[in-house]
Amino acid sequence: MNDDIRDQLAEAERSFEGSPGTIEEGLDVDDAELVQLRRACRLLEVGANLLDRGYYTVVIESAFVAIERTIQFRLIHDGAMSPSEVISSHRRLYQRGAEIGLYDDAFGDDLAELWNRNRTETYYRLGIATKEQAKAMYSLADDIHRHLIDMTRVSHECLCRR
Image (tube, rainbow, N blue to C red; front, side):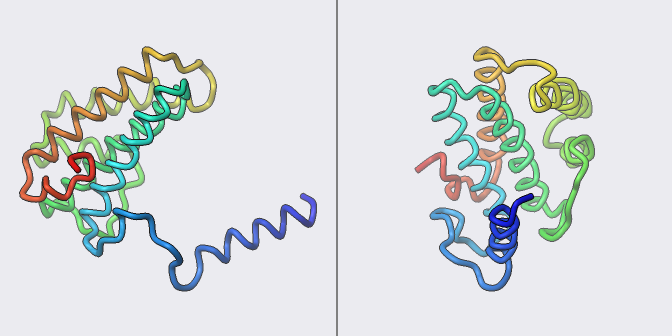
């Protein structure tokens, strides 16, 4: 790599060190569960905007991540995971949601298979994302989000509802 890119890498690394800078509006909360909830809201918002602009691959990506952030929100909210816990396996995250009754085991397995078969394919360009896929994934993510949020005492904290 040339020196300019190395300098940019060093600058990027420094930006993550030390005290935070300007925090994204809406994510300036101290509660870990609300951070996850609001991240999901932001991902859904950007997904809706990019769907209309034809960025189908990004919409699919944001839909999968919004689903996972919403599940993680509920796991923290319901006391099924600590805010500092990291679940790096997508399949394990979906299983944990089933274990605490957010949905049944079959639905969790279906989510994991959807991620495994389709997200990987579009992400690594083994397949090309389509408008129909992006719309279906966005709708799924939005419906899961609303369903899992509506069952909480903090549904008023959802940025999607403002």
